[in-house]
Image (cartoon, rainbow over all chains, first blue to last red; front, side, top):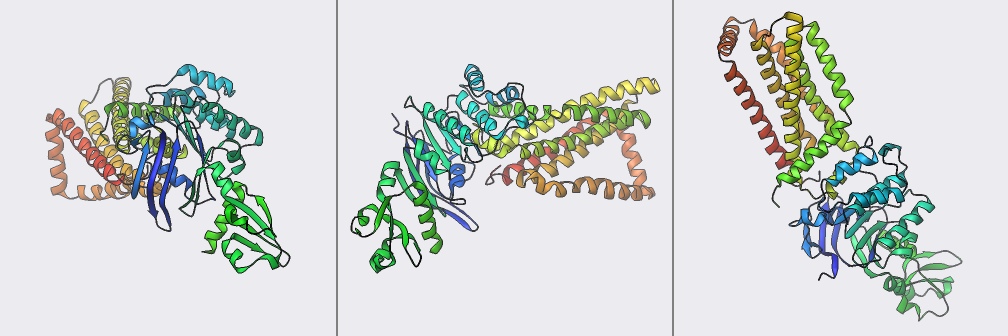
Length: 286
Length: 226
């Protein structure tokens, strides 16, 4: 019995000018994990390493408990991937796409593909280039669902989608994991999506792992602190992440445990966006 | 990870679906080649169709790049080695199929226009075209695998330039020398009486070029994200 569908242990990859350093995470079966961070944080590199599209320099990647390189073919039978841009020939019709992709999967179900395309209102004879971005995403999703993928990997799938399509997309994901046998790794910088669907969060910034764990723990471990300049002691200044000061006030992110000592300041719950923004600022200052 | 013939077969099918989108283009090129063959000499259409094949196969890389196939390959249950071997096998099959079509058209146009078939001329043009096509491909494919098509397009035109702009004039100059032209004539005379040997030699040289090129591509893509 495998509890964790995806596990990264100390994974590193260097490029000229960028290093993804010592990334570890664990995605249990039946949950959605958000992979978040600003642009250029290393989200896509992490996904490319998971899919063995890039060769890692160090570390270990286990998918369904198996090494992702040694068992690449077998593992990919059970993985569905949706990237931020469509990867089918634009003159293919929806039907051609199924024909071209289905041959690679042992467990491809034509009925499921038909059902998904009907649900997503994807006409079989419509060409890929004639589909809107949202429809192209749905076509990739239909392909991912049709081979009964246990792990869905999504790289910025909602960027550029209108709010209605995004909402529909998130509903589909929630429905997808409801039997408890499937998991989703969802890379995005639109954190509002994650607050709705994600159970786990992995936060990366400039190639470094900032946090990995439950969403609840992440949101519970940071607070937003605001106050007047006279409340900003040297000790408090050191504790604040991403401090912003004006003549009238200051604000920033602070650890939830430390926040309790500063009763003169205003303490608010932090959102994922607040955490990303302030953590990025700290890294930029370094 | 071991290379699987099953996966390579699936990749051949995928390449076929990519090429299917270019069927109209292929038919138009064959028609143009037939017209050229009728205007000049029937064996010329074999040369035109086969050199067009090298161009057609490079268009395959262009369509794959435009369609983000690097991402598609990353999601499919296949390995890099299979993608490279699959593409070379697909090229070999395409050249073989278009060779058959070219040869049939050569026979038909020879009968219609000249009432007889010059087998030696047909075979010689086919061997020449086959070697030229495989030479072009064997230079272009490793470049396309190593770099992106859009970046490598200009470098990959080099074999055409070398062949047509440099090779032909140099050959023309050499033919003016008696010793060289005598040797060429002797070789032609030898192959005229040994057509099968010429065909086997052509196939051998072409396949060696493709095999060496495939090995180079495999080496170049070992650490590269396709």
